Image (cartoon, rainbow, N blue to C red; front, side, top):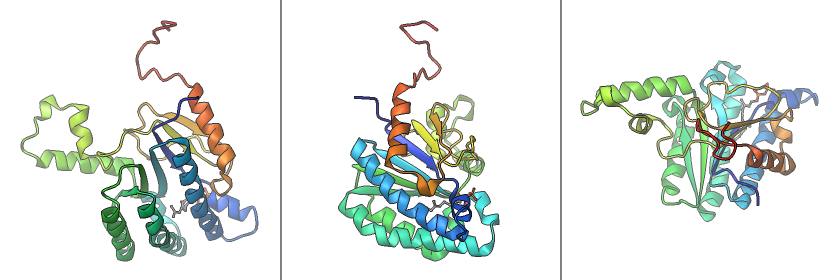
Length: 236
Ligand code: FPP
């Protein structure tokens, strides 16, 4: 059996282009994109992955037209409300990471509710990055760390520092999948992805499916993860 990643993170790109290529409004791409999230979650669980994180909205996405931002905020809220019961039934723990306090109150409320209702679960972890930006995460982490007078800044370790990140309760991603042909991280989990394997596909997110996902997992299984060390067998 090939190696399965513990934590897979997704940069769900290409919703707009998928819709435009079909003469549809961009929001149709987002709507379809949300259904793909559900399907991918089911496959992730089935394959024995334990953590799935989705980059749903970057801090920079707020500069999109107001109508698109509003559509997405409503879509996220509806998704959490509609899917919340299933998450509880399937014992999936939900978290959201990002500058959540800048999100519409209704969405913040839905996030808080679901976070609390699923806090006792550990079988599978679903995380949504909403209004997330890695640089802002780091700046906030440093600010909070410096407020803690007990911290010995001169002897700080990575393990100390990561306690101040949004992801403090999550393992680092093993595999990051980005759809739609762009080959960059776009301010997503920059520190956490230090040793992540990256997988890029030209497929737009609304068309990302089981077959594509299994290909990505299979490809991950072939990667040699040295994490900065030397391979014992080949010494190279
Ligand atoms: C990037 O595609 C996608 C987004 C900015 C939004 C991501 C949101 C979803 C996939 C919906 C997910 C829904 C839930 C409930 C998690 P883009 O619009 O930048 O596409 P483009 O680069 O082709 O314009």
